[in-house]
Length: 119
Image 1 (cartoon, rainbow, N blue to C red):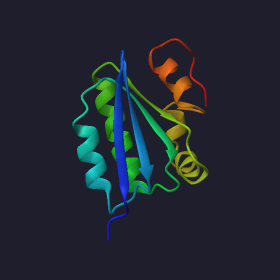
Image 2: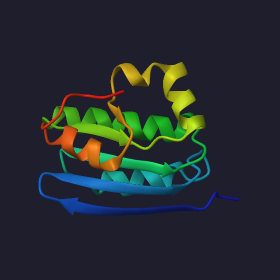
Image 3: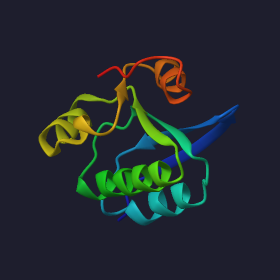
Image 4: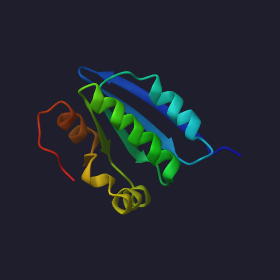
């Protein structure tokens, strides 16, 4: 049975904030991938404050999204990452390539190029 996942986005000037609520895993990977595929913005911020768990399926979608954004001259920033997903990012080396910020506001500022990367 698929894990419940709620996705929403808000377009701000120069950046789109995607709010993710629920566990990201193989049961809802396709839903997550379809949602982010429809967002063509070059600068994306993922609010992960309500994601208590993420497996490699969710991580894969985030990384493919980062590749698309980078190719378009943009970036992906992660915000408010919870402990279990943060551990996954640490173990897999994601933190070396994708900026992670304590808050959505800091991630938006960084995505717009107004602040240095924070980890």
